[in-house]
Length: 364
Image (cartoon, rainbow, N blue to C red; front, side, top):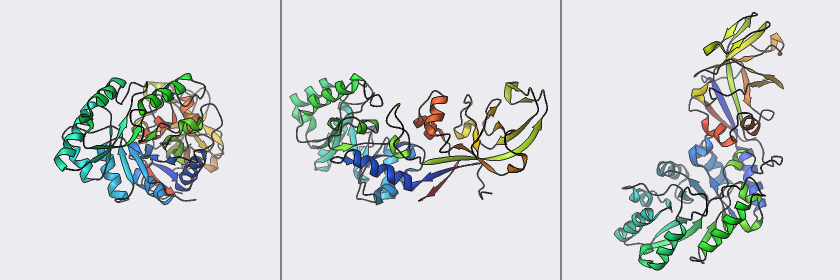
């Protein structure tokens, strides 16, 4: 039996992450492949993942928030470049400088904050500029770029090291929005022709080489999520989620289970209560059960905050007992299968996994 105090364990295969990174590098051989490790590396552990990728020669990382960047800088040391995707919070521009972090400028307000700090420091400061090419989420608009070009002092003291945008529909290679965004990006980049460019996310790497530019920014593909839409997944699986059996009981005909008595046994069943629930990221409305040695264990009743019940009738009685662990995510019940079943995406499955779930790392 597994030795742990935790009710559930997320096993993370660092060797698989390394293999996925190398595979992505081969898909874009003339492009620097960075790593997106925001949201604690999609819930897997940013420090551990980034440290592994540093050993694989990755020297550029992207996170969403300033606080994430500060923690990552402490873990990785001075050398890699760390970009902060969500721009500059008011009153905190100096912390970017103190922690050697590069902001992604998404608005004229961000630009003003960085320009003021450059003037105050007396040095030229590096930043990335993000362009909004149609996603309407973050980024400078075409009007903003026109204003910058008309008033060069708006960018005084700022060294634009990278121009970037984000693809909205790259998971669907046939979607015309991909080419529309690429053309819009090219048009905006003409105003800064000597600057490095970045457009491709995980799925963008699998579009044509025209989308690769100078830097690609994969996240999901590194962690085993399929970046190719309906095609078979080329990435190695990275995670295995396991939950402890708290209790096993026999349920007679008519036994009701869980909140609101959503389940009523129509015939005798054997049930196991698992130590994982919606507080751990296995959402209340989900219907994905567990696996044990290739046997599917369906959910019974409603998932609770700290536990869920599964039907283990199909497992020989002697094989399962209290304190054993069963799988919720593995090579059979994959992230993408769970996401499809629950009408969501693998990103949400991973990032939902809570802090109470113990993370364990292996390199084989």
